[in-house]
Length: 182
Image 1 (cartoon, one colour):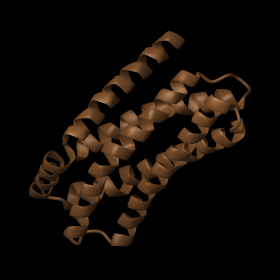
Image 2 (cartoon, helix red, strand yellow):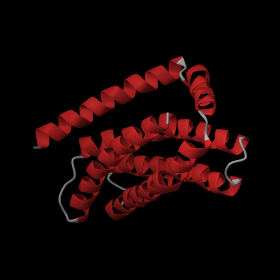
Image 3 (cartoon, rainbow, N blue to C red):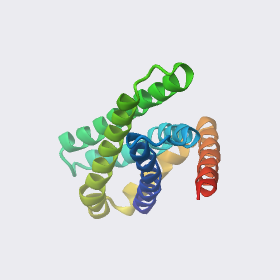
């Protein structure tokens, strides 16, 4: 379970690198690949918000239930999930607005994207350095099995299966666009 979270962080980092590259190019007066930006925004709206953070929240709850961590730390991590979701929605709406009406200021959108990148990178670094090592030490196999069972019964719904399929298509489309650019 915790290894899967680390692997997902690696996947997120790879997609963040692409998003950074597009934001950097755009901030240096190069046209971004709008198709790639659109796909990346969909990816960040789906994967972290609908799948990854829900798993982490279950691990947070297991730690709280076991009395391992002070709840203020976990409340902060959970609130960062909410903050990232809001930032994703904000830059997604601004990109759609720009694409449809050409009214959203470029610099505002670049700033939104960079804020999102900063928050997600700091959040993942915090989890990698503090939260995951602590969870590895403090959660028993039984605790992790309990989290896994909750994921299987409550998170792996028909809607979640559709989200995984959508995510798989998004990943494939992103990879295709990246290969074309090379």
